Image 1 (cartoon, helix red, strand yellow):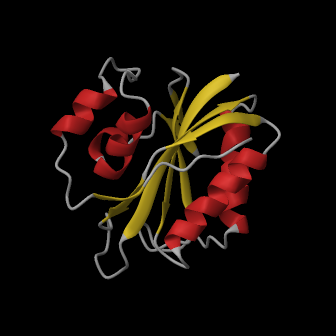
Image 2 (cartoon, rainbow, N blue to C red):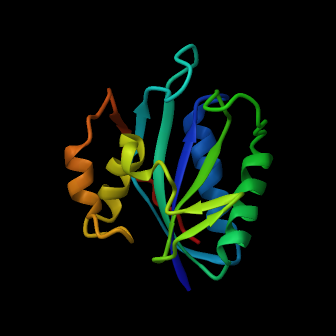
Image 3 (tube, rainbow, N blue to C red):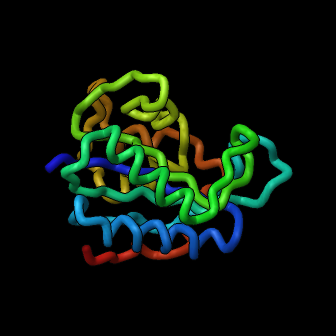
Length: 166
């Protein structure tokens, strides 16, 4: 099984409930196991500021899916949550990004691993460091060190880690 880290985010239609829905869907997927989730964090929007704050988390999953299959599975969960792909960095019911997949590096039109924004987003680095402090990125940088150095931009822990059973 491969170990993948997924970034979850939502700012519409009860964002905490949206993240819980995503976690439930991931836990029930027959090709994913060992789901570990960070705390939930409130964060300011990255793009246009005329939208609600986000709720974010990072999840570790062990999966038999290939990266492309995992992308399809996460997009199906987004769609089930009512995701409409509109404005870039705009509001959304649910966003699931593949941050890492083992130590693979992939650059394709529809999938980049590691996620290109991983090192510059506090709402990804801080929860990732919470669940995998010893994790080293494919470029040799340690997640915990990156998380300690990044400005928090108002990032706030709002709920304890979510426990999910697969």
